[in-house]
Image 1 (tube, rainbow, N blue to C red):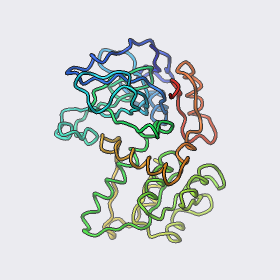
Image 2: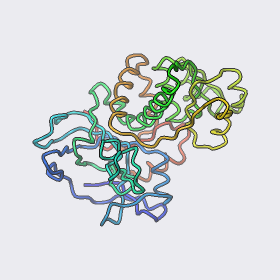
Image 3: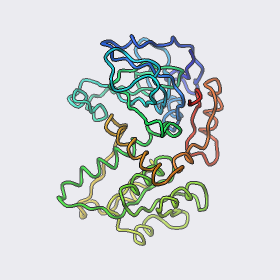
Length: 339
């Protein structure tokens, strides 16, 4: 079978690799789940790995199969698996256990180990292939009604974890009822953060660079949120006009924006927290919120799937779209047709 891989440490080495097809028995104890891959999203992480900025191949392998935003359908399960069955739609989590206490209790995303294991990123092959097999522990079921947007679940979990951690931290205040939120950035993560915060009932102002109208601002306003271009309204002015904000979700990765949106921390008893990846609970929470989004904002999630590329063999087009496509929200590979 085929897979899209890179040679870690070698820039622009993305290529089509020949791989053996996995089997359910590759996972011991009857815990295996064989998944036919249907779609795989790509993002800045994949671009950075192909640029050799980071990424490590599994032990004994010269290449790394990329793709951490997988979506597929179960083909077969081991004798001990009861959580999913053939025909179910699924998404695999990304982190795998290390040796820390947090890994041992199932919170692999909170590991304190220096070495971490991430499918398609570090020391574990990813899902940009025709099939993969995984332990049922790391498989999250996706309802049939979400099959057209299931490829968005992994990025959705990034948002779910960040917001859940913010709420958890603010329990220290005993009473915390957030009413207003700001989202910094209107890309994929910023859009999904706006969605989740609106589902939580917050008034949301999302800041982006581009002037409206364009697809991203339309999507934000379709949720009943407010879109503001930083080219027209600087962040401090926006904070004075639409704040104060009880929660700020930073989704740009651009440090001046982080600074502008997080002033007066000491005097205000404020907290900044960073998150990476997500464990199973956030995948399950993401499924619930995506189902609610389909009920409340029908068709909204599908509008994020802007740039499909058919077939693993078109990996060059996939990365070209990721790098140069104008107006792209989610670039993804259609590996196989969704039944």
